Structure formats: structure tokens, C-alpha cells
Image (cartoon, rainbow, N blue to C red; front, side, top):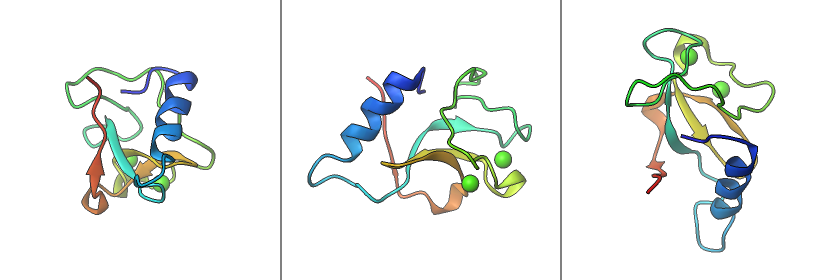
Length: 88
Ligand SMILES: [Ca+2]
Ligand SMILES: [Ca+2]
């Protein structure tokens, strides 16, 4: 879960690292599949910060997974996601 703008920037900087997935969308543990517009982590915790960039979220009930790329956080179709990023 991304907690704030600083963590968002750190993750986007990481994705921009040479040799990494710098054009891909990566799943970051958030979904509004259960209730449209109510973003929760996979563990069920309500997210107070998602870091989404205008015009996201824009997928309604068709896009229920939170993804990050080097330039944007937004909702995305859960079926299109190739990779995930994990916090340890
Ligand atoms: Ca949605
Ligand atoms: Ca979207």
C-alpha cells in the first residue's frame, strides 16, 4: 500500500531504474472490486491515500485494480496486469 506522496515518488523512481519495467503498469495492492470507488488493500484495509493522478480513476466497474507506472497511478483492468510490487 502506498501511504503518501513521498512513497509514491520512491516507487516511481524505483520503476524508472535502468533495466526495470519502466513502461509497465504494476499492481500495488489496492482494489475497489467489492464496492466501486471504495479502495481497499488485499487484506481489506480501507485506503485513505491512493495517489491516483487525474483523470484516474476513470474505469468504473471495469477497472478495479490499483496500478502504478513511472508517470501515473490509476485504476486498471485486473486481467491486464503483468507484475506486482511488494512491500517488505
Ligand atoms: Ca473500479
Ligand atoms: Ca483507469
